[in-house]
Length: 198
Image 1 (cartoon, rainbow, N blue to C red):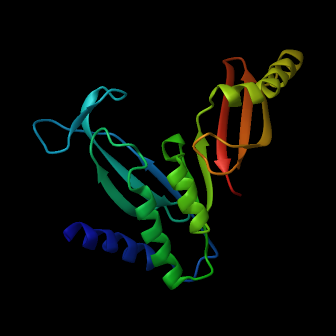
Image 2: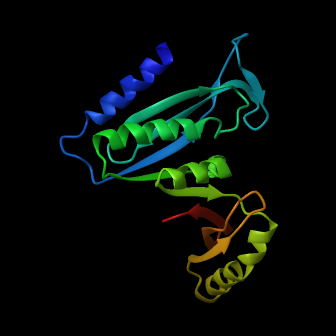
């Protein structure tokens, strides 16, 4: 019960921080590592961070930099564990006060899972979530990367090119829209992708 009340404290402070109803709100969702020492409950060794830890998750607002919701996950939890429930509660509270507000969610590839896409689409939230490039997407964006490299070699100037495509992973019930970025510069090449309904 105390944690639920604390959640509402954060949300109440956020809702009261606006003098006028906002037209659009952009939220960022992410986890971070919180090292632990000793024998605390639900602290586990995380191979990527190479430490025993908790993994808190925060939802923050881009318009005013406030922390809107916080969740304490165990040390090896998937970043998106329970995030759809947090999102639904947040949206319900926001639309109770501001029915017409446009809500956008941004997150890295830890949030790029079907349950999050489905929640955003059901809640009519605009989302942009990072997506790891698998072999299929690497193949479908190879020409873009080659073009960026060729332009860089011709001009000596850093290149950043974009393409958009429809894609459906095996775990997705339907195709979704991806935007892929390909960069070429002196330090090498880089490709990134996001899945979005914007």
